[in-house]
Image (cartoon, rainbow, N blue to C red; front, side, top):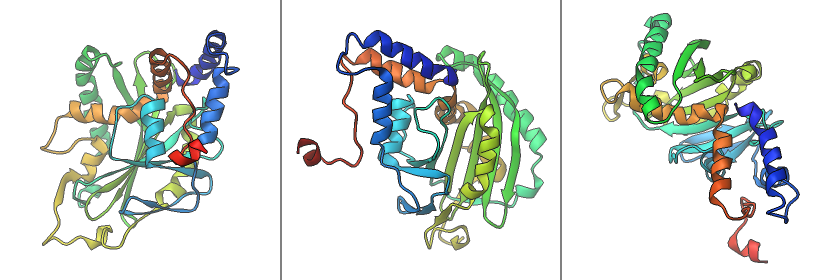
Amino acid sequence: MKRLFLPFVVSLASLITPVYGQIDSMKFWIDSLEASFVYQHGEVAVADIGKLNVPDNFRYLEKDQARYVLEDLWGNPADETILGMIVPKDRGVLTENSWAFVISYEEIGYVDDNDADAIDYGELLDNMKAEANAANEERRSWGYEPVEIVGWASQPFYDRDRKVLHWAKEIKFGENEVNTLNYNVRILGRKGVLVLNAVASMDDLPVVNQSINPVLSSFTYADGLKYNDFDPNMDEVAAWTIGGLVAGKILAKTGILALLLKNIKLIIIAIGALGTGIWRWYRRKTSLPDVKTFGESPNDSQS
């Protein structure tokens, strides 16, 4: 659905241009908005938990801009855990082939990795499929499309040396012809995990795979927050395990439906949330908004 939406936006522009004569088309607005983002390169601070060396083929949007994209443009619920996002250099956030790694942090405690080598990922996948199917009736009652976990797009792998876990699922939403790629990276630390979620279509799997290695090594925790800084006499051990991270649920703390809905806000980016966000914007506005220029101070806008 996402790949078919940009032509719709351009067509919509031809309908609204007579009403809003101050612009040539919706495409002009999109291009102007894209140009307003302030992208960063090289080393950037990620809150107070560490630093990110932005991979060469990416550019970084800080927290406020990332949340603007995710919530105002892509139609996701507000999420204060979002810390930023890295976007491929050759794709804007509103292009029809856009995708990004969304960065957040979950302070869930120290994740014990002792179970990493004992997990049966085939059995885990079967359980995840069953849980997703069981949740679909309630999802429909809330207006969401049913979800089918098709299988692993990339089987879970835990790099014990780097303390990095990554895996990818192929997901089908409703009757959509193009399946969604949900690529997950978890970087373990002393007090929680850094979360990088790349959501794209399955067509993007080759380019996402090419990007994984530089992304895996892009983040470094600050001194005192690294996995090896764990102090069993002071620090909390998480209820999550390595298998629990992959399954997407906090053991003994919450049910699968709540976690599924939490994770779904990033998954839906690739299957039409962009369209939903702009359509909502179009419906509720009486005129086209001014393009927000990030990094501009109130005094700058008046000068």
